[in-house]
Length: 330
Image (cartoon, rainbow, N blue to C red; front, top):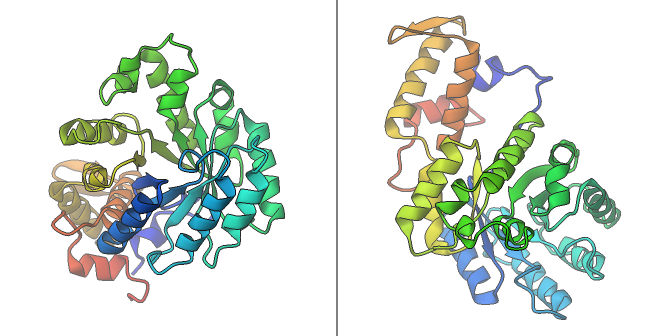
């Protein structure tokens, strides 16, 4: 009997990268270590991005890159889900820093390219990284400049790009005071038309090209309610499937906000079990017609439930996980 992943997707369909819903940033050594310890405790339900841009002291970028390389190859990197934010491609030390990071005992899960001014910057970064032997490392990029937003569809279509993130703070600052400071806040960033437009264009471009849209930060890291509300808006209204964290206390809240509810999981399981029993033909469930289109939606929901599985959170029944998700299942 065909499992959902086999029955619902044609081999020619573009496979969307499956990434954890939370991307946690840290740049100072104690915080990088603490972040890796938290990931080792919770499991790979979130990525850690070690920051060699804003996290590095000016003039000390190479030394910071060597520190990051040591953490990549160290025992705290248990799951291989640790990426690195590089310097902007225009920085004179870009290639040197990339070479140090790529020379780590364990490869980064991805490399984040900050502040690209457009497609040309991504092309340059990709050529440099590939020339250093990093062609197997996915690239992520920050959309935080006018040029990058103007070419966001081309960025999302680039074959080396896996995910695009919205750089809220730099994007607002790039408007030289024309966007108020409130638009950098947890709620204000969902209200200002220029910021909202940027978010929607990034999400739409990513989904059009099978890439992962990653939502911007919430700087009020002690306001859990504001963070949860922002994460829900990003996931449920704007179509984002990933979000940045800038404080360890934010990780659980973001993962929980992106996780399906127990009721959603239960409904999806019942629909897909009935569909499988019907040979994936259309079925009726609760007086609603379902076919392969809605089956794909519910399968994606169950995949997200697996990616957001935390202790105490709603999760799949063990029999369903064994039958549909474990590779050795019949």
